Length: 108
Image 1: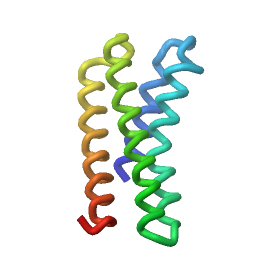
Image 2: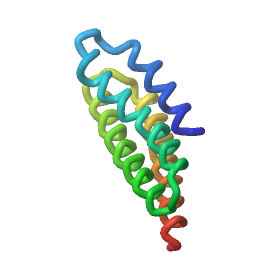
Image 3: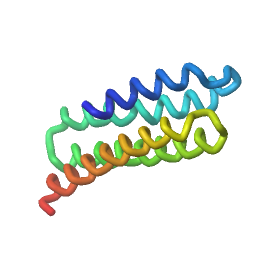
Image 4: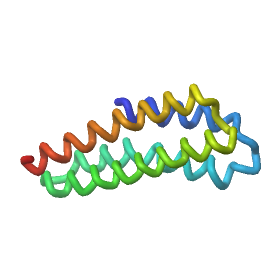
């Protein structure tokens, strides 16, 4: 799953962040990352498409949050332009897949 791989990347790259960011950016960024696959998994276990779609919307919100953290980390010099570009590309693919699945569940 792409979201799981992205989460592993986030955990790996945040290891190099300054220690003072442990309870700030690192924590927030990691939570946003693992929120995507964990909410997707929880939504899969729901009884209806409507319930599943609600969890997809949570996943999308977390993906947008993670996108912002990637921008912030780039601007603060915590990640390279290359890492940033890779994260943004991965996040946009995940967002597109979630959005398309949500449309399909709604019959659009």
